[in-house]
Length: 227
Image (tube, rainbow, N blue to C red):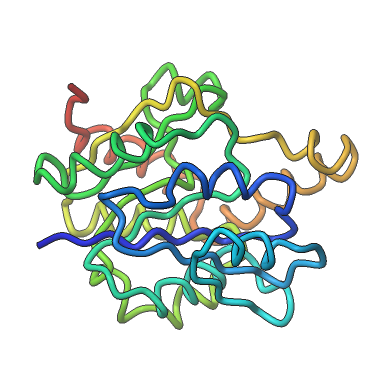
């Protein structure tokens, strides 16, 4: 039987994480919810605890890849739902839509396509660096040290490489009302642009630009049609 552990890495997300947790709490397709507080300086941990979910607290900020690895290490479900802590407009039905194709064996893995994904990803119907995904925990559970050593935002493309190697069936799930806030809106323009540049640096420290193009082509070939 498939059981899904929801893992939410969070760094200073006290202003946003509560609504994300409201969308996943008591969801019948979720076996457990684990928030990994990645060295927050605000009250992210307290808000998550008040919602009754399990919290893993890191003493200092280690980055998304490390935080997700700690969440996977703590998880006990057969599958993992990775979920960003800052999503806006996320609903119970969005969670269902992302999990159901895997639970019903129509796909091996799923990946979200948000309303404000870059236009090119919406044109090709694939955001290959989306942070919201469902996949089998066994796919990565023996490689947590490798994940911990990744660049902070190298995780998604590293996961893509595994999916392609394992020839998994991929389904893209459109989240038409969900957005991921731009870094500039959270940090201000200057800091936001710097954060975006650092994210791209991390991605291309993990894979080369030619490999990123190959990933997009390979994932598109493996995509199942969304009902």
